[in-house]
Length: 274
Image 1 (cartoon, rainbow, N blue to C red):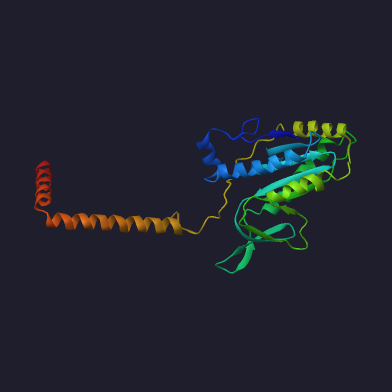
Image 2: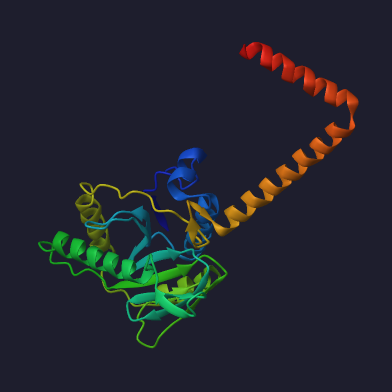
């Protein structure tokens, strides 16, 4: 499988960047775990697909405000992959994703909506290919949207109306070996090469989208900039500090030596202020 990386946080060969500070600022605290999880997906595809397949990673499509995770080109079709990291319970409804809110005990629209984003990317990809191939008498293969759940704590209830394939990394081996490779060819190898050349030429003028956060846990509700866990930690530290200072105060009140030192420091401070 031919592999093309566009991520600023990967080297041309796909290895993770050494600039950890920039990656953390752009992608969030879970950046390394996210990139390593993505590597598992890429490696699984590479083990099952030969050089007739081309995988393009972290590419910004025209009109999109975010990069697309993976696009797999072949003579059998085009697969558009989107990664989903957040844990929790979710439900699909057509081309929309809803997250379960335990405080409200009901599902509400998920933000970001990975399914809606995936279909927007599919439309942008289709439009780019159609415009690029308009004078070539080549019909682009169909585009198949795929969502990869990278978090084992994610559960998605798929409605009957959902047309998106949702997979976990362990399922990719069977998927790539059978669902991808067993399809009939719809274009020739020469036509695929033309599609790839025209596609990459058309995207040369597209500005890369700003990197998105890659987080495995949804942010909790915040008060004055801190979430519940951070406030709890703050109060634990505050109480611990008060207990330590109180213990020092009790010890000082019972020790003539400490009292003499404190009194001497106090008198010295008064002299300096005069």
